[in-house]
Image (cartoon, rainbow, N blue to C red; front, side):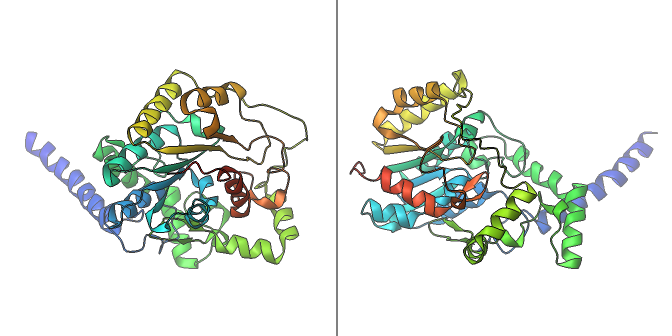
Amino acid sequence: MRKFILKLLLKLVFPLFLLIIALVVWDPFKVFFDYDDYYTTKIVINREHITQKLLSKRTIKPRNFIIGSSRSQAFRVSSWSKRIDRDSLYFYHYDGIGLGLWRSKNALRFIEKETNRIDNLLLIVDSYFFDETQQSLESLKIQPPNVSEQDYFIYYWSFIKKSINLNFVYSYFVHLLTGKYYGFMVKHFLNNKKSHICNAFTNDVQYFNLDSIILADSISYFQKMIKEGDLLWNRNGEDSMGNPKIFYKQFKLLKEINMLLKRNKTNVKIVIGPMFDQVKFNIKDKEILESIFGKTNIYDFSGINEYTQNVGDYYEYLHYRPLLAERILDSVCLNKWYR
């Protein structure tokens, strides 16, 4: 009986072992090996994995950082470095999909170890930023273990599980055979309209296709966004305030960030982004940020104001365009606060 069970287990385990080896070699999410170019695939991959890899590869270590979620991609290293009169060689953009408070704290710790110096920091936040107080197990948001200092197995296993997800496998083979993009692929593949260029040195991202489409016919673009629900027209012109997001866990993480920044004598500016819904960032949360980081270091662009009025300043309801970030940088860099 024991031999039978062992044989049965071998028959089950060996194929599973081969499958795992095959998935690792295939590496559709580009996490098991190093690559010269991580963006040769249309598969949506973990952005922070690339971000920390590119930072570790840099021989010229940066001292100035932009940190935030994909919304922070509107802010460009080239624009910020010019405004504070510093060489762009020493700048880096650290972002990740949905990167929030918990991952940002870990990212700063990782940056400190990698560079031994953080002179200036632009931290781009919004109300969503403070929802994150622990590790995510979602493959697109799970933080690399050398940054999070958490379990390596859990990290890599999340990508193996994703690789055998039936929806992903079906989307992959349909795309492979047809070369086309369909709506059901949205969680797994990048739409051609969202094609982008990533600067491997600064890690800045430019969505050249979207910008070209908007420039050619902005009216049709935004009409289509509204029709497809990518631009939720939920602005009624009335002032409203978001719910409080900073509680004990968030407060503790913010204090840890502040201690790290003080240790590095970092000049920090926290930018509360101009979200399309025009909901004002919670005043109590803003007061907490001011009490920790200083009132002069918090810049609030949320709510109904000159920065959120123009629908043309947004790609869709979650992401604003670089031209709006340029105006924000003009305001943030008005005074010489930088190091």
